[in-house]
Image (cartoon, rainbow, N blue to C red; front, side, top):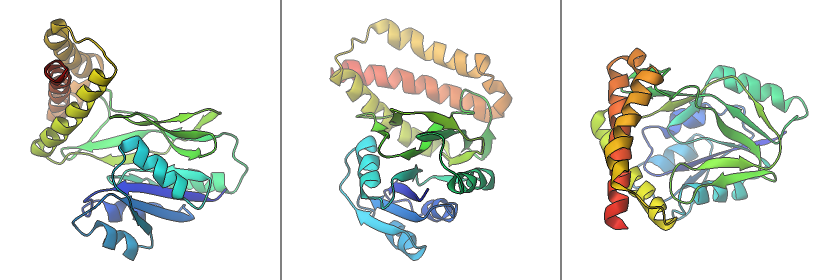
Length: 245
């Protein structure tokens, strides 16, 4: 079971070294860069990764391109702001010493937000398929919130994938603006109607669900920020869809 680890990147010099250094279990590390103007490519190459440059195809398209360029059929796909824990790496190394019993594997992702590891708010365990055989699985999602769809059997690993998200509310706001634009385009492209009630009711419900039902209050002030920003995300994607539709 030889594994190619793939990372798609754009101006990720702050994160790329941490991601690559966590991939000791991989037989190959491939970074697909979409035009960085910082030191991303140089850092990746210095750390032993194979670096390709490819114009942006969208999140799913870029990750599928990376998988297609890999030397091995087994793909371990992580984002530049993610890294494997030692526990997850050990599980993957154990898999490599045996015959895989599945076509893809998911594992929990734990996010660090504003300096705190988030264990509630609907953010954890947030299981994601990130290790898969490219003959049985591929990335889907034309606009945003891409995911791996597997046509075969999916098994579970227990080690955490670490996700280093926003370090400031300003950074979160910039990300939210970009993602809500993509989400609105997806709504418009699918011809979905956005009644005014969605703008009035859904943001409040989102806050209530994340902060109270999903126990975001246990995540401290970060929990309040997560619920509030999620409510704002909900409002903006519907508002943009109505305006752009």
